[in-house]
Amino acid sequence: MPVPVILDCDPGHDDAFNILLAAAHPSVDLLAITTVAGNQTLEKTTLNARRVCEAAGIRGVPIAAGAAGPLHARPQGVLVAEHIHGSSGLDGPSWDAWESGPGAGFGHGQPTVPQDPRDALTLLRETLTGHPAPVTLVPTGPLTNIATLLLAHPRLTDRIERIVLMGGSVERGNTTPAAEFNILCDPEAADIVFGCGVPVTMFGLNATHQVRATPEVLGRLTALGTPLSRLCVELLTYFASTYREVYGFDAPPLHDPLTVAHLIDPSLVSLVRAAVRVELTGTWTRGATVVDLDGVTGLPPNAEVGMDVDADGFWDLIVEAVRVLGSA
Ligand code: RIB
Ligand code: CA
Image 1 (cartoon, rainbow, N blue to C red):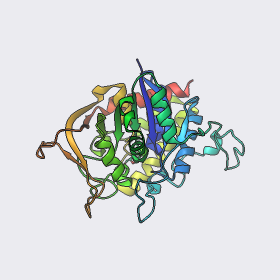
Image 2: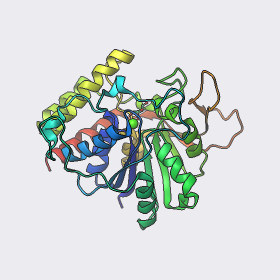
Image 3: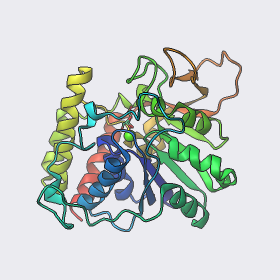
């Protein structure tokens, strides 16, 4: 039976590939997509989710917009990652070519894939209550929407199978020395999610940095020779340029699809159970995920944490997803 999934995301180059993977693979039933501010503003991440579905021919998956910022407003304003994902949040391709809605081709087109009139909280609640079995939530952006759902509808936890998230790290961060971007954007939300009692699987930077989009990967995508594969290469080429400029990486880590890849093939990433806490008050460490790998705190484990990755197996799934959607 395919795993029923809701993606909660901030597209974002790597979020985009997670949408492709979830839509393409037969062992995943993509029920809905909700968006959150993160890599870019909510307006842009929502438009980007629609753009990705338009380009990949993904239809009938409702896309609803959620939180435009964290639970507790940051004095400095909403944190975005324009230096990595660009001003659109999905820089690289010429999206005009993919827009067939009104104004398409003139730089202000819109995808024909609509935005759902409901907000993310309503879509999450209605999808969870309406589905015959518990649903897996896959957040790959700041955790504001998921925390808001848990706060507003605590009894819905029995409709959530598990939460498989990209965020945090067992080591250092990427936005501060201690904090990874998704968690830092809304540490209070992350604290609520890790403490909610629903089984949580965390894929942090220590795992996601093992899946780098190398020139060999881009070559495999280019060889597919479809408009969608060309779009994916344009996305990864841009993503590579910013990761090289900002972090000095030789190839960009495609963080988010490790979540859905794990659902498809749990053997791809080794997991350890550990107590995970989110630092909320540290002057230099706010937003850090403190992962007790050695059990020294005596706290009971509250998450599975991704550790060692079969990168070849991961990329086989990504290339196959692009092939399937691009040839549909
Ligand atoms: O730190 C990487 C994470 O932050 C990824 O999910 C990326 O898309 C951004 O949301
Ligand atoms: Ca993301």
